[in-house]
Length: 630
Image (cartoon, rainbow, N blue to C red; front, side, top):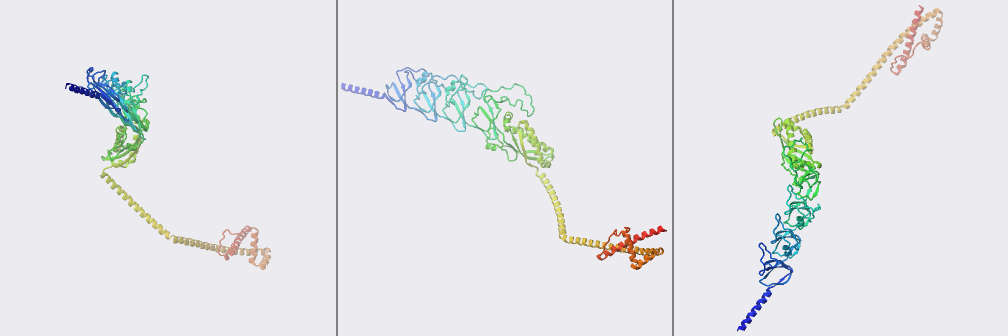
């Protein structure tokens, strides 16, 4: 009985030993990590320590790699955890629950050599700090003691096309007083630290990188950055549209000194040669790492511009259209552009119509459109002086145009103002050109679209104009009737023109006939007169011949004369005598005036005339001889 009991006890003990031996075996698979915990027979851990080391009781820092292990049950216990896997689009964020306290002022624990947190004993032996770690786990598989290290996953930083990443450091040296953007971390030789686009956080810390916004940006790509160390803000690239330039204000560098107390001297209006900046922006700069406004604007294009370090002010350099119209306000703040890219670079600002009062007290509304332009070289001055193009328009352009039209309206009656639209345009544009030049702005054009005058006044003017138009119409109709009469008269004259011409020709023919008859009658009269004179002179010659005969007879010549007379006749003797006188050139046979009649009369009249002249001349000669003899 006793032997049986003993055998039973021995068998029981053997079974227990076998069970204990079997229980002490642990198999760690390839994708597992074994974590040991010592339950007894060791040193007690110091206060505040969580992970045991150097045979201390508690969770051990050392882990078990894949394999078969045996430990004494009850003294040791095993825990199996899966390996830590970080995919390609993630990073592993590590936080240690044990280690030395973080130095004062630090947010993250420095990265130390520990085989990427896979050697916990090395981590603790190398004075690893508890808390969030600077070091991260990049894509891969890690055998980590997850009791000591708490691993969380965060997405990797992805910067897509047309975007940039702006880093803000959460740990490092505090920013110096007066800085907005952290100065770059530098090596001992003054060169920039290559922290691999913020992926090497420990190098950034070691080289005394500053907390706060960083100047460098991340270009498109994927980055494995500790989000506990750097906050990455993704922003669109800066784009300067055609028709614009971008004036850059640099926020980099130390804050500019304040102006000394006391009033500044007053400058001549429009003078940009004095201090044109206020406080922190006193001068235009050429060094982009100095606080202030860049003198040279940025041309159209895309830029990886750090929006924290640099502020871009878009300034339109093409046409800027300003409307004073009743359609409502469409104004756009050009600083970031947008609103349909500011009407596709033909930037449009709109105000209510200009309200003016005429000389005779009428309220008028004037719809005006103005076009201005800013030269690229003057863009920095505009931003430095006014802060934006919208401020320029609100503070200068709008008040000047408004006052210009108010002043002109006060000098004219409403109707005169309404009717002098062209002159108003010309004068307002000339005035704007002169004044805007003081502010480095070019006034290109000004148009008055419409002048809204009171309906009653317009009705009166309309009635007056209608009356004038009616009067003009009546005058035109009267002139038309007069022209119609003249046309009808000319038409009638034209219709009778043949009869008129025939009558005129008949009159001319009758006049010619009458004149011919008068000339014929006058010729006949002259012929009769000459014939009578010839007969008279012939008679005288015959008488003289008879007297001469008597003398000849008395002197002894009479016998010959008588013989001659008897032979040829007395008349023929006279003719012979006449011919002798003609031959001697004493008698002119060609008449001084020749008057013709009919063909039958001409030869007789000629002869009679000739004969009469010869007789008259001969008689005169004889008379003179007789007087001489006496």
